[in-house]
Image (cartoon, rainbow, N blue to C red):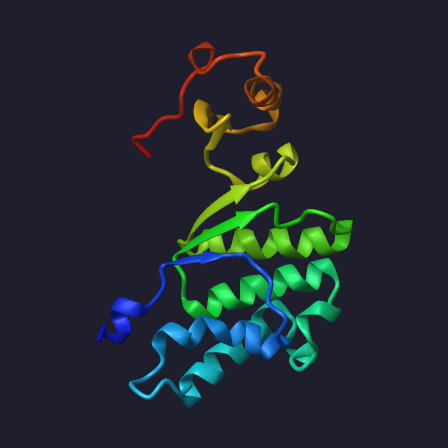
Length: 178
């Protein structure tokens, strides 16, 4: 039998379940369950705190399937918070969201990053890359074709790598000393 520490996830991946918000946010505590597999009061409090932090606590008993896209993404982030994950793998977290919903999700991602969490952001939105990333890695057909420190001033270079108009050796690679 694995210890609770060995079962504890270190990676949170966004996916959707057909559960209530409180159940979905609470799924982060599954790895911390005791010997008999029951949630503790601490597990429930951690999930409730995560829902409050992301602003979905008022929707706690609503099924996830009845949420807007932005609300669903916030629930995903609440689950990561409840898991105490240190690495977040977010695949297009603002896809199909409105401007206000996107801003809320991006602000929370920035907060999580600033708290020392590693955020792997998969996105086609170059503005989001420049806003949030300290480095961008471009993959094409499963191979790394380039890596760059993204800024507004080199955004076109990044796009050139993405579409295949440039190769990685044409650009300065990020400083790995920092």
